[in-house]
Length: 267
Image 1 (cartoon, rainbow, N blue to C red):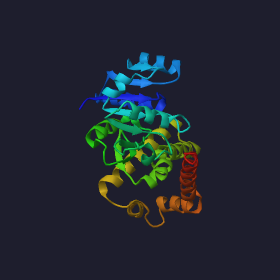
Image 2: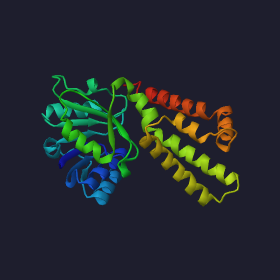
Image 3: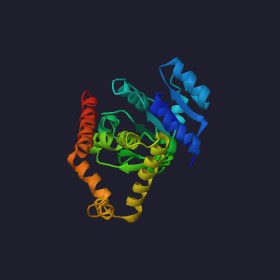
Image 4: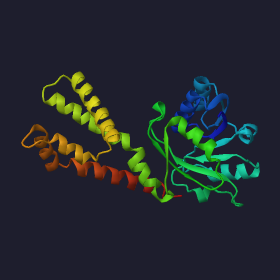
């Protein structure tokens, strides 16, 4: 499936999504348009991806698009853009990445707009990670999913959980990166060369995640296997249990979710 797409806003998240979709062939450069207020951003997108970017809205491209991305900031005039789509009788789907703006707020007065609200993941370049998705009944699910799956997996969630999804799921790689850095530093602290420590940390991280997935076992069961009586593993486990390791991760997630909720309050 090849889709025609137009984006209001050409920021980094929109760029990441379009880059992945172009790479996968779901969209093509000559049938992809972007409107952005920044002349420098427009020039960059045109030069880098050869898409049709402009500071002016190309309504002919908008009306021909299968999908329109609402990629502006919450404080920008997203309501004016939606009003323009109503005025021009746009018939395709709207995908919104505007934080804090609900599907109901984006739906047209006659309740006929096809709206999908997404919280994109940050792993678009490797097409991994989950994006949180909420849609109304009018959404063209096959077309929307073809686009979203070009940059990762999708997880349909209740809209009330999108802030949690953002602070926990989308910010998830941040917690993993921090663990990887700390684990590598621990190896270096113990006397291992950094390059080797990083190699072992990364392999352990990938292998452990794969083992959990493929074994179907709870991580606690796998810990029991590794933690033999009086051994190395249980000694390390004792230190982790005494530390704020678990609470630190939990508190970081709760803080991220709280921040997400606060960012959307003004809408």
